[in-house]
Length: 362
Image: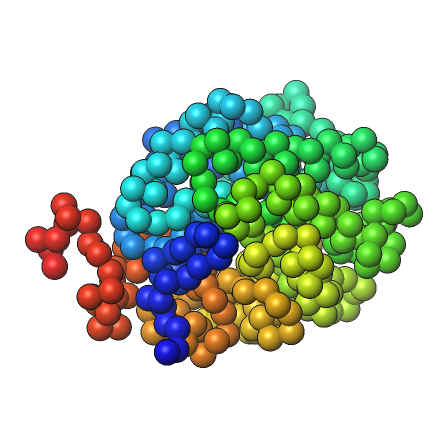
């Protein structure tokens, strides 16, 4: 029987009720302590009520200097786990798998929220020193925040921070953990020769530039239970064809290595490393070919993102074996009940379960 959007999806001992995943989407809605608020419980809980199989948090910083803005969600101590526990519990009670994305912003850290301009913040303005593989700041129009090339001790600290954050995530009740190695943030900065000019064992050749991503994934896998899956989000390409940069071929090669260190699925996005990127033909499914290629050429399942807005479109991705998960982002902002509405449009009402409180509407 061919899988479709409403087929269950199992990895290790976890089973999602369908193939719809809520994409990680930053909310910038914490105070400056990184603690989850009522906003996060309502925002993520609504998408679980709406029928998604997996509900993933926004990028959640593994240490304070790993935040994009002072208002980012964090999970670097027990207080953060305690604040997120009601969120994970509520999502699970609605039948979705609660998932969390662990992140470090690297050189894209220490700036204001998008609706406040995404402008760099210096330490005397509430910002902090940023770290990166090399001391190359994001090319802001104005002065960038202070940046420092990471030492070996910094690298070890970051790897340990991801592992510690995974432990806190488990304590909070999450079923899936995702390592964020995409969109120009710290781990992606190591992968790409555009941003990694190191001359030690973390720079230069492919094996060296990918080392920290393998180490982080392995460290997270080591503390994450064997019956629960680990995802890794990557940018399949830098979209910088005129430069020596990260390519789809590199992503295929990395995905095989991630499988070897315990990753269970690659969440395939693209870009975000540099403002000069050239996005080819943005529109429906514009990033799906990257996921499709990784799925065809490696042993790992994939999630596909990018312009997925219609139920039939999401269903076709799974039916045609282009992806294992339809990772839906902005459409979930427009419609928290995307999956329930998709079931009606696709004639699959008998394969979803509306909350009992809402059934009079059906």
